[in-house]
Image 1 (cartoon, helix red, strand yellow):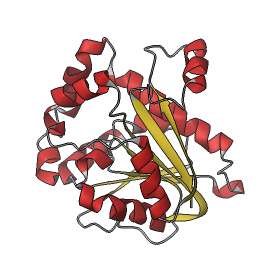
Image 2 (tube, rainbow, N blue to C red):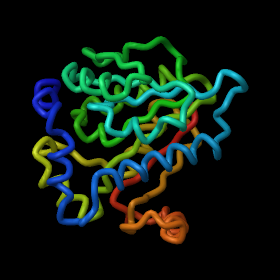
Image 3 (tube, one colour):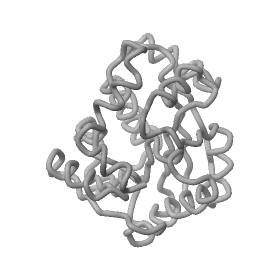
Length: 230
């Protein structure tokens, strides 16, 4: 997998833009929506711990495309990925983020280091036989009372499936449903698991956001987020 994403270190954004061009939306629209979801989590789940602030880990961060949208969300952000070439680009473009290469199935961090660990559209690149181990590693590095957040493509959304089919580095992707992600989180010893679908409407206006929240329990949006407490 590292060789595949090494080869897209310079053209990752262009590849994604090409896969979603039919929607009329830019990649930044989706990145902004994910950042807003994570920002809301911090507030709703009361993750801040006094002066220590919130330390988060982006598992499978790639070239760090999401990180410019997170500059005011976390007090400290770390990112890890299997692709050294992708991390080299991420480091140049996001100097405030601490990046580490992950060369084994074990994340390169001590137990309980983070208040939040999230993986954005990463699990579908992991072989299904390794999904549970992936979730267990996220559980290991999150402190007791902290959160994990899995953001994934909704396999029941036909436009999402079209985008995945059009994306050159998603040809071997295995999409998992929100129900499956929630089950894996439970098996990995997380609790209070809840899921919501989002990116249903092509608008960032407040009214569209309210409507999406009202329909979040239905498998309609292009993506979903499953959140669980450690």
